Length: 65
Image 1: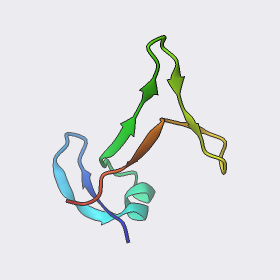
Image 2: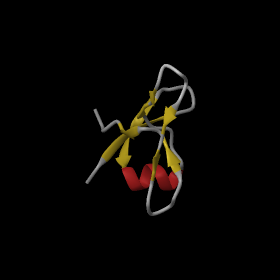
Image 3: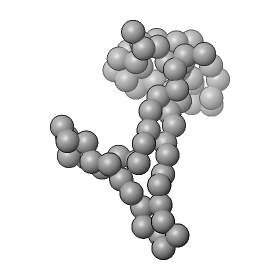
Image 4: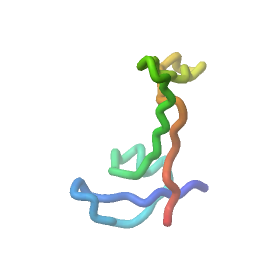
């Protein structure tokens, strides 16, 4: 089970819930995004095969704690 801390809109810690609960309820939570780009301004994205959506080069959730 993956747990995430969640916050109010001002960044105050409120507690933790499962990742599914946090997403289902639309709660504020921490994520990390890594952007890979070249000096000429080119930016790299990943394309998720299941949805064909563009995402940052690498990203993920910050786990509880």
